[in-house]
Length: 130
Image (cartoon, rainbow, N blue to C red; front, side, top):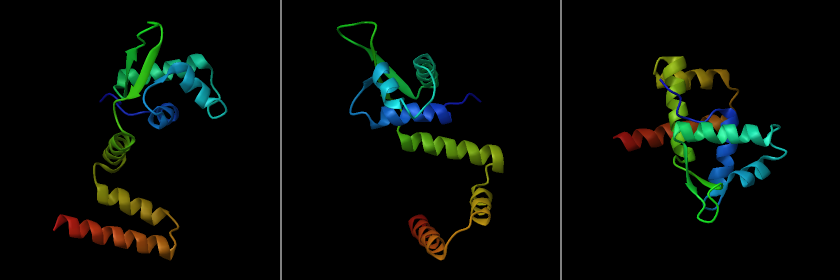
């Protein structure tokens, strides 16, 4: 199955796009990533092209300069997170969400407060499914 969600490095590019007010051009993405991502401008353009091929972002050509593309998100951060979570559970836990959650809880060092928050979440989810 073809990957349709951003990789870790692509995720950094997506954060810039998601945080932009409206669309954003490549040079602005590159500028925003300076100091965050230690790669060349050319590499960032490769990441942008990968995101385009995955269908995570789209673009429109600038009306005044056909060499300039304006990028925008086609998928929300929440959609990408959900797809990544589902793929992770499917690939590593055979699609068993309960097993995945149990594994994380068992391996985490949760405080009483965090456990209480989880209990509240479980109760909320129980109420929503009834």
